[in-house]
Structures are given as structure tokens and as C-alpha cells.
Length: 334
Image (cartoon, rainbow, N blue to C red):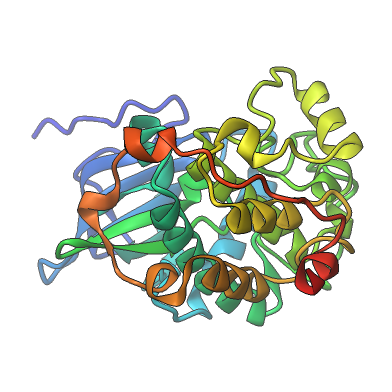
């Protein structure tokens, strides 16, 4: 029988393959340089999503270590805002590592923002608070994600509601794990996604702790509110690193003057360049957002219909100008 191969320059397994002795690859769901994601069917007919790793020559050991790290992290966390791993292993016949996850309906936040540009402020805050809850569970395990961004926040559709799932732990690291050499991998690639990475991670990955994830999540919230991350105008990698490490993020209301002042102040304080001045945890960030918009809005259910562009009426508002602070403690005192 003819078996169609997934179009992947790194040699993804062919459709129809059986991995782990029980999972048949049914159709591709996505993929990239690190590997591919398939819809699979097990021997009992149940369907799952499977992430496979490809290991081209040159950095196979590094890629496999990241993949194994992702499996280890996800296997220890059970939380409604974190994508779980239900099975993982290495296929004996092909030596392909794989992770098996629930087959979720929905799309990632990046896809929503590509279409909607920016969301209603209360919707953006509610999604960010759910992400805070997931990351809090990760941090409680002593793990920093290190690649929080819209494409790693999956919006699962459950009935007519949306549930945020933190996903992709390939760069995750224990707080006290042995540090990498600087901000780059052993093969010289930058760790993280430049538009969302914290200033300290841009300089040196060995100094990263949970406050780095706070910054990246706040930058994702900035994107939801303003239609792009704070330094979207910077085109070169080195220019972006210079901006991140030498100046504070531009005030949110410069790009989105309709955002309420309390929310704009919180986002700014969570994006402060110095970790010691920044919001110290995703738990505190969530609590501050609760207080800014009201817990009914921040913790309320997010209907699928809310994933639409901010309305013309919202964008026409000129909110009270936020008085920005130099530290999170200053925010709490004001």
C-alpha cells in the first residue's frame, strides 16, 4: 500500500507508521525544525496527539535532551491549565522519541492574534490569568519554562468555552540545574523566542528563574492588548537584545490607549528590566490582574466567541493615563 510521507525536511516518520508498538500515525497536525505533531490512533481506537523528535546530525544529543526534559516535566504536572503527557518513549524500530498528549480541539494564541490582532482587554486579562495558573503549577515544581509566548499557549475549545493550556516544555529547566554557557545552546542557537524573552535570558540563561517567565507572560499579554509585543518594531536580533537590556518596554498605552490604566500599570511592572524590580511571581501577577478588572472578569469563563478583535468602540476609548512605576513594590504601595 502507498504510504504518503509528511513533507518535512528533517525526515518525519511516514503516515501509517506504528510507533511505540501501538500508535498509528493518521495525519499531520503541524511541525517544524524540532519535529512533527501527528494525530494518532492507538490499538483500542482512541485518538491522541503525538509529538515526535527528529535528530539531524550535529545536535542530536542536545535535541534529545530537550525532548526528554519536556517528557519529564509534563509527566509530573497535573493541572487543568497545563497540557499533560499521557505516554512517552522511544520507538524501538526507528529510535524516534515521542510524546503522547490528549488530542485537544482549538488553536494556539498566536493563531488567534494573527487573525484578531488584539483582543478586548478583559478577554486578554482572563486568558493571561489562566496562563498564570498553569505556570504557577510549573513553578511549584521548581521548573522555569523559558519559552512562554503566544504559540505555546494553546486555547482548548471545551463546548463553547476556551481553556488555556501551557505547552512545549522543551526549554524548561529546574531552578538549580547546571547552567548552560551563557544565553546560547552548545550549538550556538539562542534560547527562547527573542520578542518574548526576558532581558536576563537574552544575556545569560544561567541567571534565569521564574521571574523570566513572568516577563515573557507579561509580554504575551502586552501582545494581546496592543496587537504586537513591545519591541515588534525592532527587526534585527542584536538590535532587539540591545533594546531589551538597555531600556524599559514602551508604555502599553502608547500603542493601545484604550487599555485601562490599572492594567497598563501592571503590565509595565511585570516587564521591568531588572528582575529584582519586576513582579516576583505569576501568582502575584494574577492577583494584581484580579484586582484591576474584578475577579468576575479575570476568573470568569472565556467564551469562544470572545476570541475576536477588540471592537471599534473599545479602540475609540482614551483611558486615563497610567502613572508607571519603577518597581513592583511601588505598584503595591500606590
